[in-house]
Structure formats: structure tokens, C-alpha cells
Image (cartoon, rainbow over all chains, first blue to last red):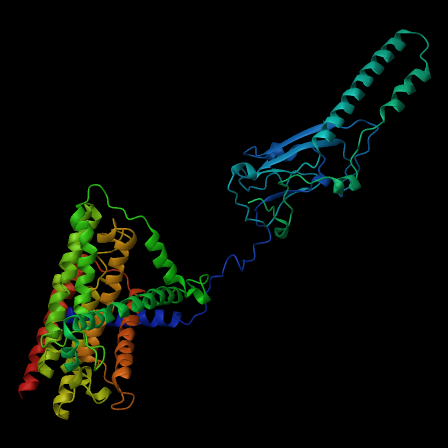
Length: 229
Length: 348
């Protein structure tokens, strides 16, 4: 192509390609918007979207497997053993609860949304929800307390455990002493067992509802967000 | 205008003030509309919605923007040349505003009906370059000075095709007075200069290709004059961080912005007055009159402004050498060819 021809060809290309581009943008002027008006309209999340963690504390057996699986250690669980005479009930999956879960904190600010805590849970009580709007002005508010035990209840459970342990120790000592002695008496063994089951408020469904909920316990669905922002 | 003589000194001063304030009122209202239009057109071309939360479809957003700019802290960096820095936005706006005085908005309104109208517009709008150079230099910021230098180079080179394009209209109409040029084109769309003007048929038909090319070149060159995409190298927000107005904030920044938008209408107004019949109705005497004239002038101007916005959201930015190539190697030679052709046709 000669220089002159190239010059005019260039000009023609410039004009025609601009026309093509402008035709495209003009067409798009009348294409409905593909965006959604976010706070008013929300896009549907994928089924397995991983967002805020939720713990159904009624099903928690305090096994600590989720905390151990957590790669960033954002889950803190403290437990108090129950005594043999207490019945903490069963989870919805049929597991027997043997431990008081006195602390179940998730620092959601640390959470990396890997869902590794979800898989080991034997009762499927820790789950990923579709709630993603939980920003806070204070980082402390991002530590969610899922345990529903009051300090009073925890103290009572500890007290009871201590008492039971002391009694068990005493019983052991007595058994050891009885072993040493030739004829153990059945009556001395039975007496501490009945005396132990007095006055400790074991948790039932009814007492849960009456308790004031902890301030930052989030609900599993998006409608029940904590209103502490 | 005879009434002015009976008003005394203060009366005529007052009338002059009101008369000269009308373009400012227009510029402010127009800037609000165009600000909104620009964002909405941009969004819809990209399949978005833009402002939706301030008022119905975000119609109050321009007011919110202005309120925000008014409240902003007015910062002047310590290393800046304070006097020039403060002066620059006003020089830019002044250049634009002064040029508005020669624009015939309607058959009864023109700021100053001077015989050198078209020449005055070209000359006085060059003041914008001075203001931009001033602002960029006074900012003492490398991006700002880059932007200002580019702006000066660009405006100076694109003024040549613009002036030559205006010359074509002057050659055909025989007047530099924009009001006269507009009156020359009265009588309907076929009399517009872009379609050869009200000349004998053979001359007209011969002129049409030249005037069409001239209008196209005038439009392209005016895009570069007002620093709009694809010739927005002086601002180039992605590489120069807004160029010459990087260091400005608050109302000073708003002044630059207002001047840019006013400039958009100014170049459109000149193009309309010269080639698209100005305030004259496209249907001859139908829907013509002073008020309709205002409507037609602003309407035609806004169509060109929309075209500028449309191009902005279509084309990417040119490289500096491409910019210079376009001006010196394409637009200017074509303009010379057009002048030669039009001159030949008019003489024959």
C-alpha cells in the first residue's frame, strides 16, 4: 500500500471504527441495567456460600473439634463437666450431652470463612449462614458469644462438679479403705449419691427461654441480625 | 436598545449587569443538567443505573455534589505559588464566560452584538489555556505541570483547525458577527450552513461535501479544545490524576469543573451558530420567535453536548503523538483543502 493510500485508509479506518464503537454504546444506552440496587435488592447467594458462622448451642456437645480444626484459632470453647446424676438432654441428632458449654466464643473478625470447623462437628451445630452484613464500629462487637449459660449457672455447675469430684475422691478413699477392711457396708456407699443431686439448676428448654440472651448472639437467618451497630 | 439611554447612569449599569448575568445563570443551570446527564449516559452505556438514591432516579445528586464542594476544606499546598494558584480557576472560567458574550442565544439575546463575534470567541477562549497553565504551574506538582503542558500544546495545535473551520463559515456568510451568521441561515434546515447555506442550487450542492467535512473537523477540534475524551490528555485521570486540577479542592476545583462544562456548551454553541442555523427553527417560520429561538439554540447545543458525552464514553484516550498527528497531519490539511474548494466555488 502506498503512503498516500495508507494515509487515507487510516482516516477511513478511524472514522468507521469510531462509528462502530458509537453504535455499540448507543445500543447499550437502552439495554436494561445488569446491576442490582444492592441494599434494596440482594443477589441470591450460591447454595454453599460461606459467610457468617452460626452455632446452634442447643445441639453443641462441647467436643471442641471445631476449635481444633480452626486454622486461625478464632473459636474459644470452655466446658464444665456434668456430674453423672445430671441429665443435660440429647441433641437433635440424638447425641447425649455430657458437658456444660460455659464459653463458646467466635471471633468473626479473625474468621477466614474456610468452613473447616463445619465438617468435624458431630452434631452439625456449627454452620455457615448466608449473612454477610455484620460490620461493626467496634472490633470487640465482632466477638460473638454463643454460650447461653449465665455466670451464675457456670459457677453453680463448677461448684457441683467440684463437690461431685470431692465426693468421688472420698468414695474412692472409702472404697480403698473398705478394700483394706474385710467387710464393706452397702449403706455407706449409697449415702453420698443421693445427697449430691440437690439445688443445681440444670438447663432445660423452659429455663433457656426465660434467660436474657447474651448481647451478641446472632440468629441463623438474615432477618434476626444483631442490632448493635 | 434605545431604552437604555433613558435610564441614566445607574439604571444602565443595572441593566448591563442583569444582561451580562444571564449567561452565568444559564451556565449554572446547564452545568447541573449536564452533570446529571453525563453520569446517567455514562452509566446506561455501561448497563448500570448511576445515581438512584438522591431523589427520583438521583435527580438531586448535582445539588448534593455542589453542597459537598461548598463544604470542602479549601486547601492550598505550602509549596504552591499562592497568588497564581488562587487566580487560575477564575482566569479559566473568565475566558469561557467572556466568550459566552458573543454567543447569540436568541434573536433578541446576545451578550454583545460585536462585528468580530467569531474572532472574539476564538481569541478570548484562548485565555483558558493561560488559566490551565497557571494552575498547573502554580500547583508545584509534576502531574499538574504535565497536564498543563499537554493542555497548552493541545489547545494551541487544535486552535488552528478550529479557526480554519470558522473561516469557512465566514467565507460563505461574509460576516464574523455570529448574529448575522445565524440570520443568514434562517428559513429552515436546508438553509443551514452544514447543508451549504441559502445559496443557488448548483453552488449549494457543490458546497455540501465541503461544509459537512468542515463541520466534522470543527466538532473534532472542539472536542480537543475542551479537553474531552478522546483528547483528554491534560486531565487523564488514570495517568495524571486529573492533571492541572489535582491540587485543587472545594470551590476552586468546582470552578475548573464549571468552566469545563461551560466550555463544552461554548464550542457546541459556536458550532450551532455557525453551521446548524443557531437559534433559527429547522422548520422555517414554524415554531420560530425569540423564545422558540432560545429553545432551538439550547436544544441544538445540548444535542452536540450529548454527542460529546457519547463520544467520551465510547472512545479511549489518544496517545500524545496520535493527538498531534490528528491535528497537524489530518485536520489542518483537510481544512486547507476545504478552504481552497469553498473559495473556488464561491468565486465561480
